[in-house]
Length: 508
Ligand code: COA
Image 1 (cartoon, rainbow, N blue to C red):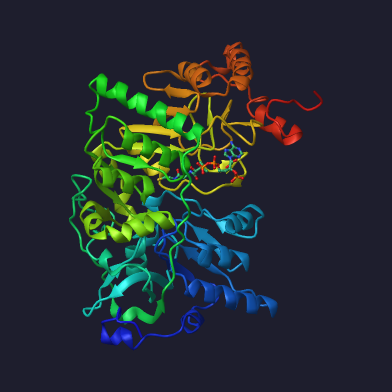
Image 2: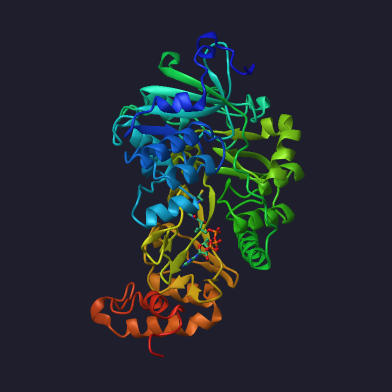
C-alpha cells in the first residue's frame, strides 16, 4: 500500500477500483474531478465502464449522470461513452466518442459556462449528487488532501455529494503541495461575500481539499498519467493570426490604452492559442501575468523566459515533454503558478476587476460579430462553450480567433448569420483570422460587417459576403441596424449541405 494515505481511517477504506465502482448504483449522479485532461479519476470510471458493458450484454443498461469540471480523458469520457454508461454529461466535453454519442442522440449533454456549473449544482438544480469521485495527490493525517493537477469543481462535489470515493494517484508529483488556492463561495443566495482576489497572483485560500471524512466510502490507489497531448509547433497560419494580435496590442500600447505589461491574459487551448503565447514570448511586452483556465506549454515557456511573472488557472494541459519540464522545475513553478477552483479561476467578478484579455477560438463568426464557438452547422456539438463566455462577457479585451476557412476552403468561418450564437456582438471587441484583425470597437453592426469581411474573410468569400450585405441593405422595411435576408441568411450552410462547398449553389 502506498505511503500517500496518512489518515488511518481512510487507509482502512482502501479497496480495488472494481469494488469501489460496485458501490455506485444505476442512475446515480456522479460528480467527478477533471479539467482539460488533468486530474480526472482514472480507475473507477474504467471499472464503471466494464460493469456497464457486462450489464449491457445481459440486457440491463447501467447509466449515470456525470458531472465534471470540464473535459477529462480516455479512461473516463471515451470508455464510459463507448459503452453508453453516460446518460447525461455536464458541463463540457472534448472527446470524439462522447461527441459522436451526443450528436447521434444516444447521450444527453448540457453545455454550460464553466464558472456557473458549480454554483448550479450547489443550489440543487441538478438534484442530489450521490457520489463524488475525485483524484487527489495525497491524503494527509488530518483527513485533508493535496489536490492533483486540476481543481475544477472538486470543492463543490466534495461538499455536496452524499458519498465520496477518492483516487490517490501516485503519478502526480507530491511537490504539487502548496500550488493550489482553494476558496469556496457561499451556497446561500444573498450571502456571498466579495471574492478577495485583487491581483492574478493573490493567494487567499487553503492549500488542501477539506471534506467530511465520514462521507468517504472508498479509497482507490492509482498510478496513471494525465491525458497529456503532444504539442504541435505552430503552423504558418497560426503564426499569422498571432502576428495580427501582437500588432493590435502594440497599437493599444502606443495609444496609451494599456501598458507594456498588458492586462492579465486568458488564453484558450490549442494550436492558435499556443502560437499567440509564442508570439507574446518573443514580442515586446514584459512582466505579463495571466488569469486563465489552463496552463499549457506556451505559458511554461513564458514563465521560463521571465516574460510572464505568474499564472493563475484551474488546470494544466501540457504535452508529455511539458510535463517532464514541469516536474523538473516544480519548486520554482510552485511559486509562480496558482491552481484555483473553476468558479474562482473563471469568476466574472474577478475577470472584470482585473480587466483580462480574453483570446479564444471560434467555429464561425458572422458579419455582425456574433460568435459560434460550439456547433458545426448549428446542430452538432464540437466541444462546448467552456470558459469562453465567462471571459468574453467580462474581459477588457475580448478577441476571437480562427483560420478563415475549414475543410480545404470549402467552409468559410465568416458567414452571413452564425448558425448558433454563444457570444453576441455586444461581447466581442475583435475577430482575427490569418488575413487580419477586425477591430469592432466603436462600430455599428454595418460598420462591423465591413471590417470583418474586408479584414477577416478569405478573399474568395468576400464577394459573396458583400453581395449578401448589399442586397440585404436594399430592403429597409426589415430594418437597417443589422440587415438580413432570412431566406438567404443560412445560404452558405445550405450550399455546403447540398454541394459540399459553401461557394457552390445546388445545380450550378
Ligand atoms: N464548420 C465545420 N467544421 C469546422 C468549422 C466550421 N465553421 N470550423 C472548424 N471546424 C472543424 C475543423 O475542421 C476541425 O475538424 P477536424 O477535427 O475534423 O479536423 C475541428 O472543427 C476543430 O477545428 P480546429 O481548426 O482544429 O480548431 P481548434 O482546435 O482551434 O478549436 C474550437 C476551435 C472553436 C472548436 C475550440 O476553440 C473550442 O472548442 N472553443 C470553445 C471552448 C473555448 O473557447 N474554450 C476556451 C475557453 S477558456
